[in-house]
Length: 110
Ligand SMILES: Cc1cc2nc3c(=O)[nH]c(=O)nc-3n(C[C@H](O)[C@H](O)[C@H](O)COP(=O)(O)O)c2cc1C
Image (tube, rainbow, N blue to C red):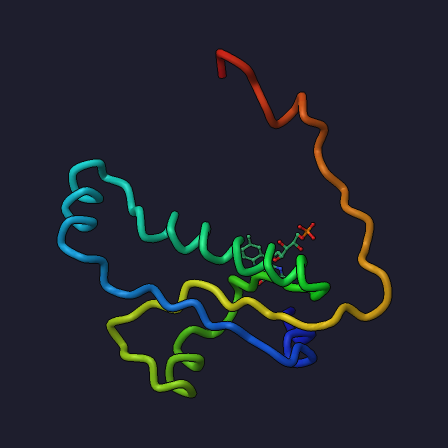
């Protein structure tokens, strides 16, 4: 399904490192995995920077993690959370189809 990925000259492999003790304690206390939120923020920043430099990017969440780890020698204890492809877009970018704001944003009440 992601065969287009091989056309991209750059693939950034986003590896989740072990969080420090404070972060782990906070996550356990609040029952929330903050490291995944951090990965989302960092990955989006990479995509925004690529866009700012006139490049295209695509976040890839569907891949064979075992194979990626094997090829790159990533320790078994680490997780590969995302791959971000970067490259020049072929032709013009497709038109964005976004839900209207009224369907995605609410004010003062859910
Ligand atoms: C966490 C995550 C994983 C994704 N995984 C894939 C994927 O494996 N293959 C794919 O074609 N698109 C994947 N996408 C979708 C694209 O990266 C992209 O976000 C989507 O095409 C929307 O692009 P747009 O912002 O230009 O509309 C994923 C998106 C996210 C946020």
